Amino acid sequence: MRLVDLIKEGTQTLSVIYPEREAREMVYVALEKLLGTTRHTHILEPQHMVSDEDAVLVREAFSMMASSEPLQYVLGEAWFYGRKFNVSPDVLIPRPETELLCRTVIDSPSAMAISDGCPIRLLDLCTGSGCIAWTMALELPGSDVVAVDISDGALKVADGQDFFEEMSSTGARKPQFFKADVLAQPLTSLGQFDIIVSNPPYVMESEKPLMRNNVLNYEPHLALFVSDDDPLLFYRAVAEWAALMLKPGGYGIVEINEALPSDTEEIFRNQGFINVSTIKDLHDRDRFVIFKSL
Image 1 (cartoon, rainbow, N blue to C red):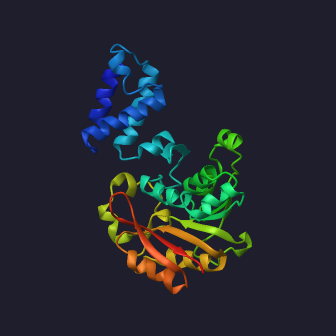
Image 2: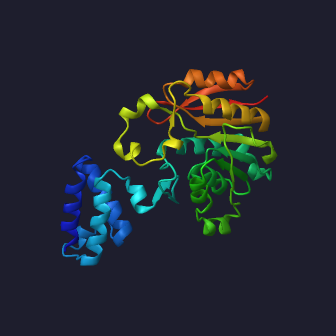
């Protein structure tokens, strides 16, 4: 069948649950991955044909997407900070908002010290796919990045990311990944760190009705949700890890629930940190809390 007809069919299929423009964009992305075409192929080559075998493969993908399975899981990959990461249902799909956390660290004076021959140590708590840990390691060649997660599946995905070619050209070091429960005793054997970052679970159970089915039905609840009775338990845990493992003058940054910035700030102030403040994202929503050790 013609590619142009397959695009029309896919858009109609996905428009049942997505706005038409979004549905068409998802079709283009899927076809680029599965067939190697571009969003202009059907325009430049109106008679471009797709084999019956490939059409079956593509339709299977469209069917999965039409059942609300995220495109990233269907294709097994997601983009973050300009790089392609492997993803699976064991990990959250990296969000564009989290890129600002990485940018904040990269632009910090501590990160700039690498150019002066002073490599930094960075700890990523609740690493998931490893998108933050890998981004830090690759953007700050020479840094020593350590990351932990409680999920064996997530650690397998994170440790299996393949950036060998970039590491070879820049001298960046592969992050070290360890299994650990952030809510348990801090793993002080990992040593001291200049920077601690975390994007922990923070969505309250009561917020589930606000979420799309492609998130609610497919992404790992272990990495998403916390009880309404104690929505900040992970931030108290991060504060405890940071109190024991953050070097003097070091700092931390955590992604937060936009409904709880003041309460989150208070946790870090109570743990003795200074310069505690909230950072807004590009949509002017309270998105991160940053703190510094004495």
